[in-house]
Image (cartoon, rainbow, N blue to C red; front, top):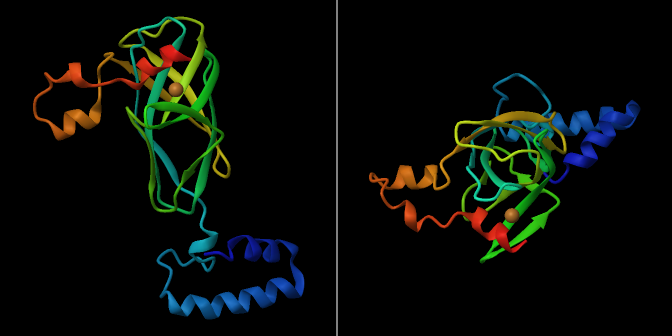
Length: 190
Ligand code: CU
């Protein structure tokens, strides 16, 4: 896996180096069994296969700022979320929550065959300089940009201010919303 970059560069330069790398690859390939899809590129060269699901924006308390949540699932090689934008927002930034503090981050890893979760109390995107206040029932278009994959645009539904899908899953009752500390609350301190 560590050889990914090196291998790709060799393949790209072509010629004898590529041939050598190819032979080495063929040898390695026998260890890990047959590729299901018949491609000879191996795991390390796999393209990311990203999907964005479970996206939502809790109806914000403030008129000019909102938080957004979603999960990126990946059935391929590693990628990175490197940015986001929305026609509704003058600025969209990526935030991690460390303890009770939010930190802006330039990128988030999307692991190979894994997922990157943006959930309440944790990672979130922050939409600022909103052109209008998103109301429950609206959809907000957000485009996520990745290091390798093409950008993905999601219409994020605006949910109730206290909406939290992970709570809905782990508790059969939904009357505990009061205890859901929305991370959008923390944006007041920005
Ligand atoms: Cu934030």
